[in-house]
Length: 190
Image (tube, rainbow, N blue to C red; front, side):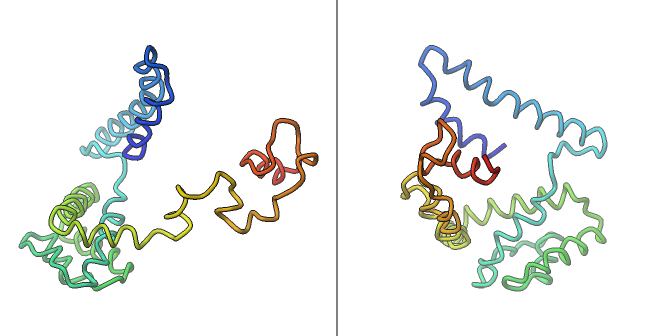
């Protein structure tokens, strides 16, 4: 859902002024409907309107570089912060499972752990914006960081696709020499 919000400006720019509302609705209403349906189903099952509980892992994983540099991310006195301080060490991802196990045994549910981890993540962005930015950017591979600056050829981004450069005469009609469609056509044997 959060990623879909990033596409709103693209839909807005790509559509004609007289039909922008219609395009925005047709692009995002299916996503909103599916997310609402999932949240409603989970609320009926568990009493929590969640789509996923993966933030209990992902949001804590994003904070590990800050812990490695000994920033006080978990400096509160509630159960979550105390347990996190006692369990998490540096960049050891396996300790996240141990943290969740301890919190579960202490009585927290997966949705509660996910919500608390999400709050800790946003709190870290508020308190340590520079460190969070550096930690976030440093996790991206170089080819993804430079993606916006490459020409549109997929082979410029991923060298493993260099073998896909062929003569235009070898491609089915409608495919350009370095197009993504050409790569898919070659992979499928057209």
